[in-house]
Length: 496
Image (cartoon, rainbow, N blue to C red; front, side, top):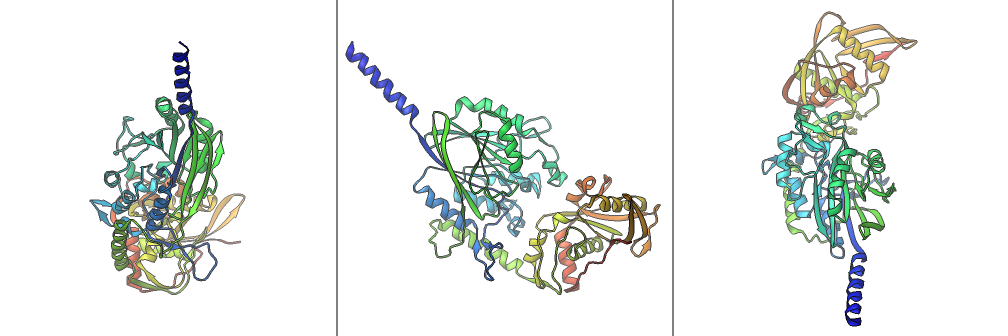
């Protein structure tokens, strides 16, 4: 009897020891890579010759070196697309598909889509998810019947390092303000907090660790951490936050790795009895080291072939810039040129352009197709519609009073402001006095059309969508005029 009791005690001891034994996992993560598969200049370095940073080769080599000595889980928190012309090339039937093929080669375990991954179309998005050999996860993205679609899962459970890891995807509830609404027809975004809690309740008993893989921004992630129970880690994206050391909010570890493939996030965790008992994290700067031996030769060959094709197409000089192009909060010379180009392209009377759609300044000198792509990386289509002179006047009043970040073309006006009221001293459309009863042809890009209430103060109906992208029409205009000397013109000017 004593021998049996002793044997039982030994078995119980070893079982308890095994149950309480620490398990260690390294989570590697990226977000907002924006198609930056090749290295680029580290703009923040003050040296005249700036070092190169980022790119998928350095990313892959760094991940491989960590995998050799650690159990690794590799995650991405969205916005793989938009930022490099590679998204304009089809691969396996999908624009930007080569990015996901490279992520396959690197060995990603899961990703949560971001808003820019819908920039081309829903159909293209689904094609991207089918190229990916890793799951697409976003629990709060559903169709109008609250059913899962888009080749998308609400969660996955991955076994790694002796742990059952539940990964739940969450998309920003602000999605409809971030993407051309034509690309979101039939998509519904549920409450992040409620959706995540429902999934956690469902999988908590089946997992040792629960990670929310989100694309909504650090502030929203911080709120999420305080609103849900049973969550261990948030790997986030969207706000491009460079969180050097993960934050701990309400017991939830929150991490994010910046943007443009410049950093790889790393969190080492110790898990014991269904809890993270210790962690440390950092960002690994992905400095380009061309002398490094890349083991993934297949990836090297694939990237070389893609870069060669892009360099051939986008290194061509299309015009000469005589002055620096500088973005400003108000009217800018680069904004004037772009709005003029789109107005001329569709033969409109008036054009509007959202400031945030212009993504980069440019120093004077030759303008290449790549320079222009860096300025206008979004695949925005042009639209036309008619507005009365009275409506145009109300839009300009709205821009003045709210300081809405909008560039204009075709409008020339002077105004006085008195006690919050606007008095126009002069108001011309195409160098002729504004006629409030006349209907004028206007143009904006398709994204701005969906956000017209926010940018222009009015809803726009009955717009015609054209098969003309803003990028292509600006390129045509540059090729036509060859030398560019655009200036600020005080198109909307306050006088005293």
